[in-house]
Length: 130
Image 1 (tube, rainbow, N blue to C red):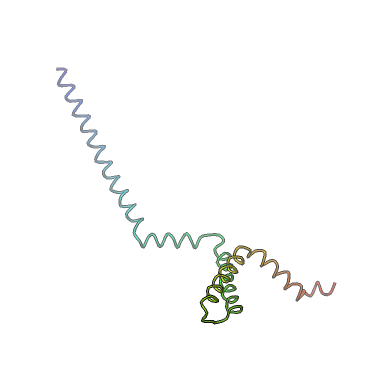
Image 2: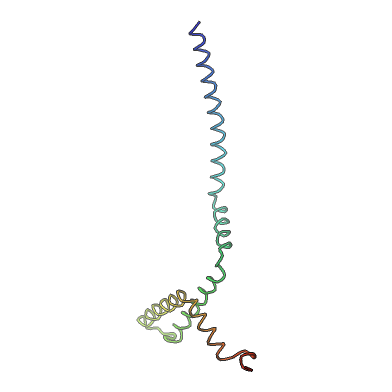
């Protein structure tokens, strides 16, 4: 009689483990589908764009970068001009990268300096009257 009870217990334990296995397989398949959906190229691009758009300093940093690039480009054109000499072209490119780097790293200080400079050139009416 003891062997029958043990056999029934063993079969019940096996059935329980098989049921757990089925549930875990279903959960694994669902999780796999979620991961596969997240790694589709279109979803990766969408998520990256959303992260970029929702950065707090994107507008300010982007504007600073654009101003730095434009300033570097025009400084190269002013100092080097359009030349066919490869050494001058290399020197101009290095100078452009240097100026762009300096301006992008010190954008806040340059913005403050230009702001105070413009205020000195064109004082407001209330300051001029006092």
